[in-house]
Amino acid sequence: AQTVTQSQPEMSVQEAETVTLSCTYDTSESDYYLFWYKQPPSRQMILVIRQEAYKQQNATENRFSVNFQKAAKSFSLKISDSQLGDAAMYFCAYRRPTGANSKLTFGKGITLSVRP
Amino acid sequence: NAGVTQTPKFQVLKTGQSMTLQCAQDMNHEYMSWYRQDPGMGLRLIHYSVGAGITDQGEVPNGYNVSRSTTEDFPLRLLSAAPSQTSVYFCASSYSRQGYYGYTFGSGTRLTVV
Image (cartoon, rainbow over all chains, first blue to last red; front, side, top):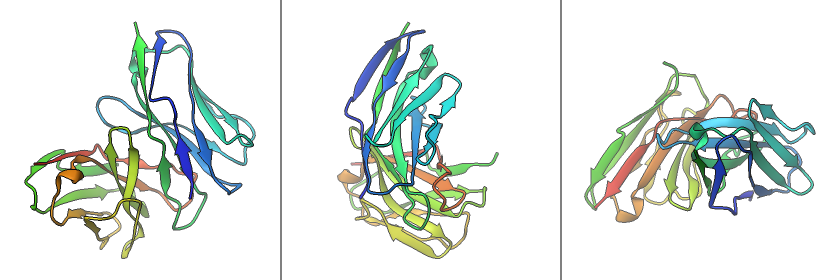
């Protein structure tokens, strides 16, 4: 079974600075998808970024980018120019590519605070 | 607005009571699932469905039932509520079984069992 590990329960960053959130996963498969979700205090789950395992290029969405290291099974999220609105819980998630068992497996999450 | 609609947003139950959490999506998504979120535990899968008439158990299915009679609806039933079921529940759906698509989540239901 796939597992997703987020070992840092909390992190803090100064506004306008850069922060990196870590995530590792365990799988025996070569093809899969990885996601970062943001959960602000409103509780809504928001998709931040996705990475396809067969792509070597790291995904980027505006101020959010990932460092995908397939051999190391590592998938970190970098937030540049941090803003107060980035304060939230962030979840890393794994999904198999296809089939009935293509469910989303989540890490335990990390709470990010942004200092003004 | 297109999306996943969950009701109710908040609920308090007494131990032993039963209730149904409603979930509806209007995006014609095949894949629907229920998660529970507990502090320090992330989101854990309760049940999921890959299409109307097809459901299966996830990681923590005990105490919950589901059915999927239509593509749009995927209700979660608590048979006899227990304090251990106090949690935030999320319904989520996906366009297809293909992993490229992340999930669209409902806004969640905070359930307290006393």
